[in-house]
Length: 233
Image (cartoon, rainbow, N blue to C red):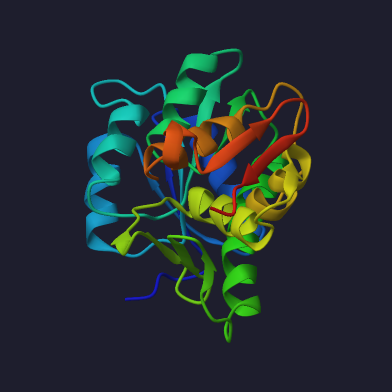
């Protein structure tokens, strides 16, 4: 079943903040449903199709991190996390568990919607652009833009939408170095912010899913001070 492109699930136990953000997101043309805790949020996710989830980290009983962990066991829906400002541990952990991006609170509703739109635009835009593309093959790696899926050595890769986006950009530019700033624009759909660790964490997660080359070299290599390169093996 295809998710409604305008359906957003907001999971946050702060009723006042959730109402304010939900109203703003709705005014931007999205259909918003709200959940006040992690368990009810997971119930809604199992019952319906959403285009994206906005998920707060700090919630009682079932934290946002635990919700994300359980969610990734049955759904690859894009997730935008709300994290406490300066809590890098939560930010990195959320990305490692499969979040697509995060916004640090306190944030403005405009910033939240801009990040949300960037994720949805990236996913929708790549699908439309790649409607007639064949597979991109780089050695043992094959990437299918139309289906947004990839295999390595004939083994399907389980990737989040952000991980897939990064892998596709690197595959399209195999043999060349792609800067982190360009990866953020092309794969995440937004400029790279100061102290932004998204690209590094996502690339690290992708590397763990790809077998190393001969001699133990990673397929995706770091070019210090510049960015990353997918090696033509």
